[in-house]
Amino acid sequence: MKKGHVDEYGILSSWGPNGDADCCNWWGIYCNNQTGHVVKLDLCACDYDKPLRGQISSSMVELQQLNYLDFSWNDFHLNPILEFLGSLTDLRTLDLRHAYFGGKIPYQLGELSSLQNLYL
Image 1 (tube, helix red, strand yellow):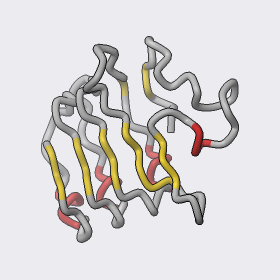
Image 2 (cartoon, helix red, strand yellow):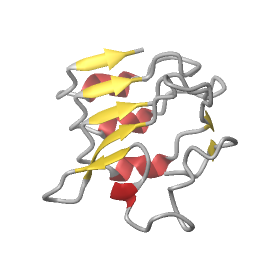
Image 3 (cartoon, one colour):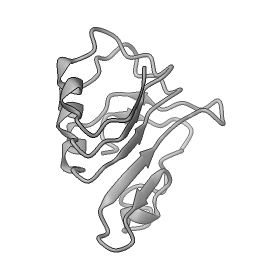
Image 4 (tube, one colour):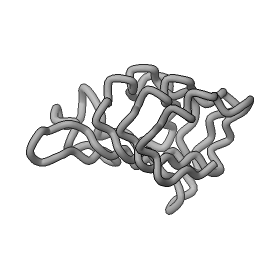
């Protein structure tokens, strides 16, 4: 998931090979205590002036139990919102405010039948 992000401030330093091996202990990642599946990804840069930049990795498609996704206040350099987000069918909240995405909103987001909160 970290691939494609430019993390010049070390925000994701707990992620991956030099950090904790259990992703449920990584910053911004929340897991279901019973199943261990990632259910919330909160990467909002709203409380600090250190946004993530770059692209969203397509490996996120593997997070099928994800119900909350927040990329707000980051800088995705006008990269498009990725269509695969529409396959995360358990999403109830999707927050992409002030994340500097470009292009059209993919129609696949309309397939998010569990979506209750959408912030663009």
